[in-house]
Each structure stands twice: as structure tokens, then as C-alpha cells.
Length: 232
Image (tube, rainbow, N blue to C red; front, side, top):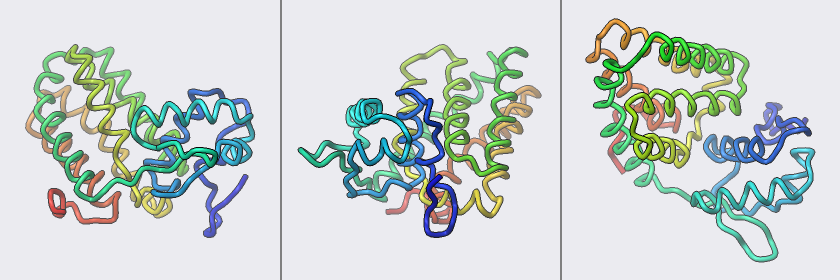
């Protein structure tokens, strides 16, 4: 398994050779979101395929999926360039998430069934386990699934899709460092705490925790303080 200069296993190289296109896409998304794949850098499908231990075809198909998401752009005869995203872009993503995901907590509390609560709590456990072992691919995958599942409770597929797209557009450049120092685990534990608050009907506390959770994404995870959200 390849490692970066600090000796940490890279997100890209952590994928097993038997993975399929969907897993390749998810791993590439995780590498992009966590900043392992650098903005402005061109990556070729064969080179990435060699690091994955798979053929170039699923990697090329996955990269084309990411082109449609606006995360990378094709460069003729060379590969795919990671699209740069500005501080202003990240601020705007966080602001939209705050407007969407915080107020929705009241509706989620009303519609949350014991079965859905149990399913979300199980995802929360998986998020915590991934944070403990520093598995950023699984962490980001389960975190994304948790938030999509929670929003889907209100029964608005367009809203669920929008929230999911916004999460994929974020860049969490400080995520690896937080995983290495154990700080990521504290954020991971917020997921199950959120569900417990919703089950008790404490909507205000749930909204406050969701607000702080999104602030972490834009602040601490990106190497800024939470109070800097909204500044560019």
C-alpha cells in the first residue's frame, strides 16, 4: 500500500483490488473531498488504476462521473484535472447547508420512527468506528449516507439530492490531520448524539448541534476556526 511522506496510507491506495466502479467513484470522491487529490493537478486514469490495483476502465468511468459532478475536468490526451474550489465557494456551500439542514430538524423529529432512529444510530456507530481507525473512505461514505438518510425522512427527494450534492462539493483539507490526532472522533460522536436529541423531542438542541456540525466542516476540518464561516 502506498503512503504519503508522513508514512500515512493514502486514501486512494486503500481500495481493494476487487472493488467495482461504484467503489472507485466513492474512493475518488473521498480523496477529492479530503484534499488528497490536489486542485489543479492532472491525474491519468492508468496511473490511478495502478494505485487502485484495478484496470483503467472503471477508473476512467468513475472520473467521467466526477466530470458530470463538476469535481474534475477532462484534459485531452492527459487525463483529468481536479477543479479548484475557492474559499468563497466553500463559504457559500456551508451557508446553504445551514439554511437547509438546520431548520429541517423539526420535521425530522416529528417523522422519526424507532426503526429509522435505530438505522441512523447504526450508521453513527460505523462513522465512529471509521474515525477511530482513521479510515477516511469509510468515514466519508457513512457520513454522507447518514445525512442523506436523515434528510430523506421528510420525503422530499429533491431536497435529499441537493444536500448530498452540496456535501460532495465540499473540501475538507484538514480531515487527515484530525483523524491522526483523534479530533475527528469527537465530530463523529455528534451523529448519534443528534439522534438521541431528536428522539427526546429536543429540536432546539438538535438544531444547535447540526449548526455546530456544519461549522466544523467549514471551520476546523478546513483549517479555519468556526467563527470564520461566512468570511471570504
